[in-house]
Image 1: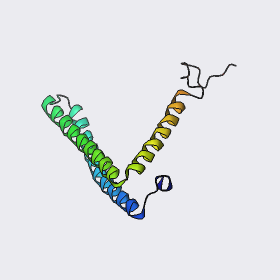
Image 2: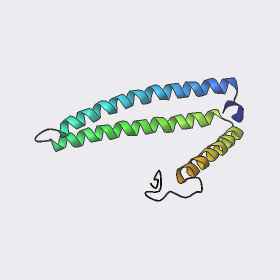
Image 3: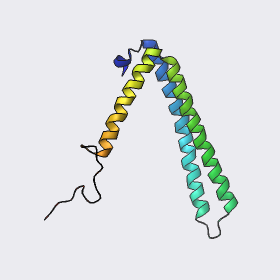
Image 4: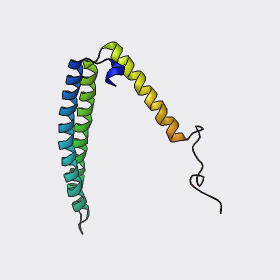
Length: 124
């Protein structure tokens, strides 16, 4: 990727800083979400569940997920601001090529989704 985009040493370092910062923040949020999800599970498994507490916990989880989304969006913006116009275009082309391979892989070798029961069946 570095060579295909023609990144400079400075760009590589800045990209690492952005990635590391986002990773640490997202990892902390994921831990919080996991903790809140466990709390939600416990709220739901009560004999007489408190619907208001359950709704509040769901809102807390949604807010944390929104924060993660904002961090990812900011990271994307920060990364794009590091790249030149030419590098952004090359990255877009690389992403398109990867997406094309993923689509072909998901639909099968002939571009057709296997019919139900076709995959992995054998006649005896």
